[in-house]
Length: 194
Image (spheres, rainbow, N blue to C red):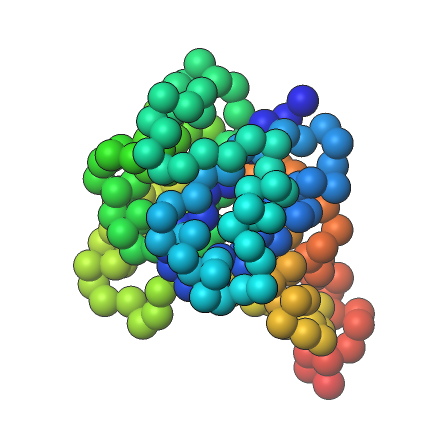
């Protein structure tokens, strides 16, 4: 069984974390562990039609950020890595500075100290020099900075296509094979250069 941790912070874009859970739920060989920040619960209510209980129901196990005693707070709990989608600048700052004051940032720090993948879908624009410095610090500790930038060579037809494409690519970076994001085919579909 492959275990993957999904963190959802309070940044705009909670749908990225929700979509990751939906995709992973389709694979019976993947066990998901979800951490929702308090702000994420509020963002889910504001930005989506999902109820927080429904989002929690997509995961194999679910925790609040206060549950610092959860198994995922320890390096002895084997995982294939962690995706924080979306990743707020506050969460990025905690990761960059090894400030594990809650389960979300502690679990992220554990991934780094154990040499496991940590993918951060940082959601902010525009970026000022402090944000860029934090991304550099997190990357130098081993985090993968992965803003949800859409790929248009797959000709997305809807917002759902764009979200799925970004999430599918992030999950692929974690080693999860999936077919929800378009792969570059050398331009044989037309469009570029025509």
